[in-house]
Length: 428
Image (cartoon, rainbow, N blue to C red; front, side, top):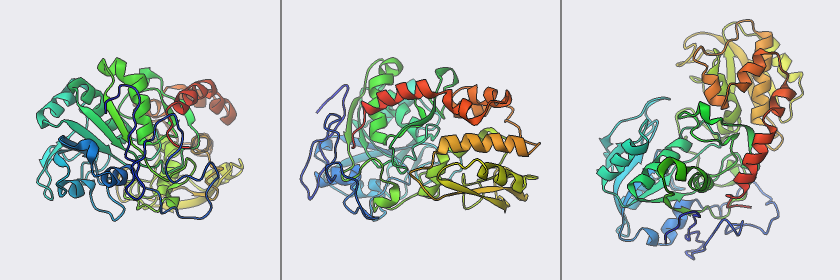
């Protein structure tokens, strides 16, 4: 089956029965007719890989397959999908592609494992990190695959680089005229709505290639549909031959702990689904001189710097932000910024996930940090502009703008993005 615009695959299977899911029907196998599920666990949630396998890999028959994945591409019993597929005679896996942090997840941020050979499967591993466009298309040509199968766990944030590994691979596959299949996974923070500013293309980088919202509220498969429809014609000169194998049994609004699936950190500092819940906001602290909690057991939940005291937690608690409490905290990072030094600051404790707004909360944290700690500063390279998608957050903050004014400044662009987003959603 080929398609230039839509995606959609027909392998959402339950009990081995295939089901076709398209953007038009707005539902997935195993849903409950629009009513919100009750109970903490949904064992019927099946990620795209399970539905592909249940259909006997029929859509990959006769194809040389390259799998684009990392350590998060696992089955519910925590086996690598590459190992499972490579051992199955019904599918021919001939290559592995991976991105930042590598296939096995050994490097920290900003590094990869390079081209290598996987010791388990014996397959060649092609590193896509910092490769894009024609350079990445040449890698795909060299691999001699017919179809690229993508399976990454995302965390719902624009600046998470697995989004742009997906995008770059789709662009390169379109250039190389290869087929592209996305094995979908749930958005771990639910994806009920999009939040935050939309990227200004003048600030495009590997933490944001195209204009999507800071918390995009989509699954990898839905992002792929949007990328293919809106951005690939300009970036690659054509759309890629795209298909999405949907998740079965997941409803938008279900958090990851309701899926019954294991959480494998998709990057070394995305430790738990709770990390993902705050990450789409607190990653902005990477654009400051403060610690974002790397080197602790609670990255992106713990924030601070040497010399910060309890006044910061008091100030942000005084705002009455919904969904979270902020505990005065002290820690010593084992690596990254301020490694080996005592850091004062706070820990975010989310008590109501449905009410919590990670982007608005992070802006409030930035504003109160600036007011309560005289040492606060932006990184000199203005990395904050790439993370926020423009220079607006920095310049408005420096000009003394308040929380409501800053968050209102992206209202119109967010509404426009959300309308486009809704046209590409697969799940109710």
